[in-house]
Length: 473
Image (cartoon, rainbow, N blue to C red):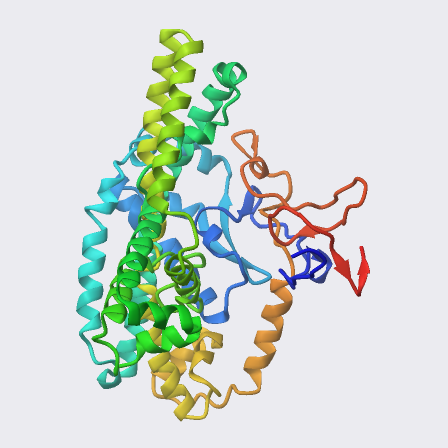
């Protein structure tokens, strides 16, 4: 590989915040906007249709959660979903009424935040799966457009609701891990010099189970010479076409891969329904499968055993250097942190369970819009505004949007090139604490030798020279 150049990322390293005005002063006084909670699953600007849908469903699902767990919905008077330059924000109005409400309801808030994670995994998720299975029995082509429109709202509400439920134990996981790390770093780490994450790795959470299942599938494929040759000698796109073709739907590889996607293909990195899940776009999973079939890549079962062994050895080392009371507290905090972590991963892994079918429903509406000459391709349905979609659903003549949609896409592209502030206005406080201390920051300036200045597009580690315009830079 020496003296060879590989292009690894064509995205800009920094972004320009000057294209858009972020000097937003939310009203009334005491109002702040933060990109936390569900907004963390909105890393890019929202397409117009999702922006309109989210405005309704993000707030309504929060209302239902508070009604369900606390019998209170008054908090929603202080909380709304807000769009700034295409990006989603939670808007809080923290006036004296908000603080008084939080003080009055503190006991109920604590009870809500300590709901057992299985309330979601065993109490809510099965209901969602059952309803989704019922909807999948429908023949979308035979359904009235108005009913399709109603289904899109039902499923969008379901996705937002599931994330809202998951927030409970996402908060628990964050809190327990933070308490463990804080205690460990202060009382134990100076004596053993072992990173705290060593104690958290090795358990069976969704990503580990998915990796082990894919590795097991690869081992099965390797036993059949013909199937192995298909995987090794064909591109990911060709294998995907084979898996999706009706001609080969009964082939063992196709059946097993579809079963894998049904269980492990629902991870959602962007809640915007214009985005695909791995279930719809499995190219990266197929690439990983090819690596395993080729005999490359580390055995995840072996790796997990090594992590568990390393964790046990680290615990023994801790026991040798601290008192019994410190070790007992260490184990209690570690047990709680490890208990919550898998629920967090499992929740995120199921986040996209409704997304593929929801997109199918939208595509059916998009085909009808296309036949009327309103949009050029059915995927452009996401670039409508909801008022326009309602107009079409009501049976009225909407008129062509073929010239308008490219303008909306161009604006979205400009918005994507910026990096939205995590908190507006800057230096906002809640209960005396700076909110931006708990949120991802923009690098407004970076000084030092051999450095770029600007706002980072993504995290990462530079391991080679950056070359710009054929000149080392």
